[in-house]
Image: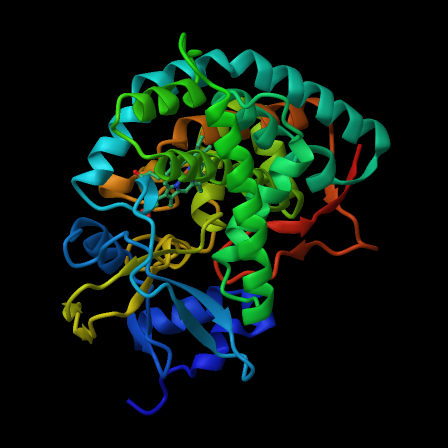
Length: 404
Ligand code: HEM
């Protein structure tokens, strides 16, 4: 094929801001695209992303490399040389089964339900402040505040500083974002070491009787000999990042979709029972994680394409979720979509997101508050929204709104 996309397209800032035309092109021309010269493969079609999540032997979650932007603006791999840490999200069976069992399911489910009152209180307060201001940067005032505060309570960290934890959560996804230079990436790795030292101290300060929270459950796993101290630390770090960053993205993305579509606001105000469907459509249309990585231990084939051993594979949930093979009017919000919860924004298979119920709950509560406390949500025409510069994360760095 002569007209396959070229590697530089992947990190092109305009395509990072609006990646959907590139995704569509890849779905048509190369649904599994071995990025030339990069040992990276990109998967964009719904059925093939689904297939890869099920073939866990061929597509391992063991993270072997990070991606950075080289001097020619091409995506390159920074290989860990076999030193990757296998914990929870980056573990394969049987370790993955053990990690998931230690932290979940009932503890997390129980704690999440108990947090509903806290979420409502926080959302009411943050949204009221935003509405009172009228012209507001929504991320700083609302979306960045709620998920990190809630996940901090869910984990049960002692004496923590939410701003520092939010910065750490943003750092974790920046590490995976694929757009940093090698030296910026190395700086970030040092900050990651510092936050993991702090998390390790939190574990050291926790002992029997364990609190009924995730910190207590993980420390029990350590004391029972099921988890090493480093594994325990990385599991908590993963939960902090996953819980603190991605729901922030979802809330901002959903509000952006609303701000651009007054008719949707009217529909949801008239019938709030449509809100859960809207949250699913926001997850599908603007998936907070555009992709997550897999590694390929031995040469394999996906669709019609061979993938060499050692390749880093990017499973693009954000592209699959707009695949016209799977969805009618894939680029439109449809509150009546029958398969609304079957998108891939929370992944699929054994690594399916453990925080999905919490993310949905937080988004529903914030959106309900916002719709209730306003008659109009608009983008601020003087300050356009700005996306975070990341190949992986779909989050607003700034979302200036006019609320009335
Ligand atoms: C809108 C918000 C969220 C999105 C879009 C999201 C997305 C995802 C995705 C796509 C995966 C699959 C990973 C894979 O297949 O490699 C995942 C896994 C995971 N998520 Fe979430 N997530 C969200 C919220 C949360 C929250 C609130 C928490 C914690 C409280 C959380 C914790 C996790 C963990 C621990 C895993 C790894 C599970 C495993 O490997 O078994 N996530 N998430």
